[in-house]
Image (cartoon, rainbow, N blue to C red; front, side, top):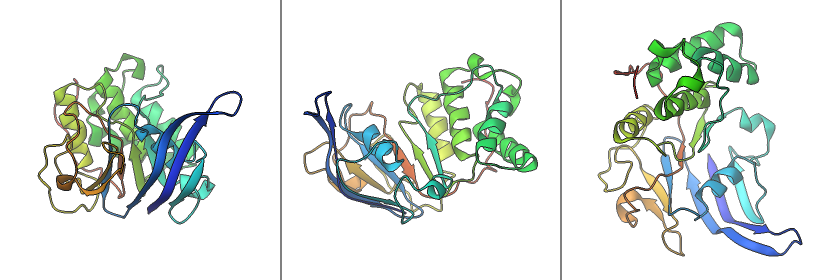
Length: 247
């Protein structure tokens, strides 16, 4: 689904002089059914890599394929769901109106938007708060409605940029539980890392060689780290959540 070879991104100053090398010769692949984490400290180029995968930035050199096409291929973008590090939502819309708006961007019919919105609100545990505007939501609730908007188009590929950033332990647990509905996934892998269930592969920026592979084979990241995740599989929106009215 994703193939990255020799990916490099160098940011330049106003005069075109190299200023910072954010991504340096990165190589990895993501196949269907995998949850793929990008590991590393702040400033190591994880979010830059995500933006390159989405076609929001041009690589300085290297090759990226998403579903066999360039990340800027318009038809490919309709198969991707994206949750940015900061959720950019309209604060005066309620949760149903928010999902209806994003669904309209994908030209979904009215009936399909309503159906998907009801499924996703149940999935993320926001059915009891649908009359409240997004501006009244807590940080955790905003991440949950952000996750729902990333899934409104029934994507084949979901990219989550630090989905647990800023959440308390309960909120982190809820987001991780939601991610277990993605897939089919490989068997559970025990790890000391932040995502402990059904995460198969990762690439680590913790060393200059940027190793990739099973989490159990990689250096453990800082326990407070938050990662971008690439979930290559469709979610199952029938999973019910409990304790949904509060974060």
